[in-house]
Amino acid sequence: MTQQAVDPHAAPAAPERWPTEIRLSGDKRTLNVAFEDGGRFALPAEYLRVSSPSAEVQGHSPSERKVVGGKRDVAILKVEPIGNYAVKLTFDDMHDTGLFGWGYLYDLGREYRNRWATYLSELEDRGLSRDPVRRSAKPAAPPSDTGGSCGSGCGCH
Figure 1 (cartoon, rainbow, N blue to C red):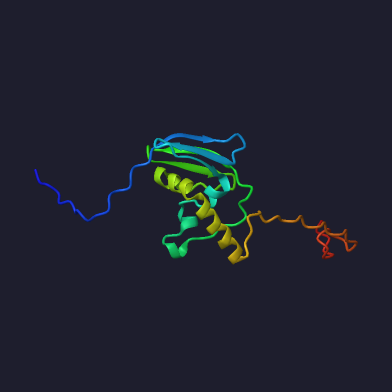
Figure 2 (figure 1 turned 180 degrees about the horizontal axis):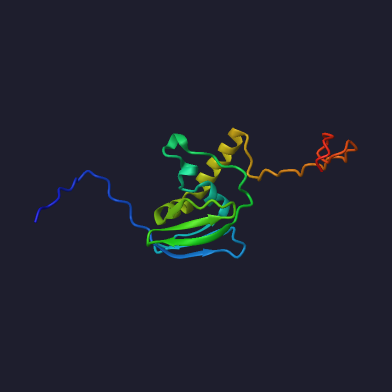
């Protein structure tokens, strides 16, 4: 049997975080997570959506991370366990590609104030808003007396 060398100067591994409860609120806008060390966090759906660990949001490197606006009204449709290490959240904007590991959820809860303040600052710096973009309905075209409803006079309609 061989022994592995242990580096006495290496930083200790972060403690494993295990949730004892993961519950979606009735309005689907808050994910309540409790951990065995007593940590309890109410994580807003908007915060989770804009902090998604997916490549779509985080990119493939820190320089590719995106600041996502327009998610104030987002809700969580589904919370799906992935093995014994994460949950997959499906949001009502159909984003569902991020896996939220226990350590990441814990960090999101513990660092909520700082992360949220940074997010709001980044939105402002980029001229983005938390509010969704509202598309106005196109006004109906006035009736045409030129023959066809397409307005060209071709008589197609």
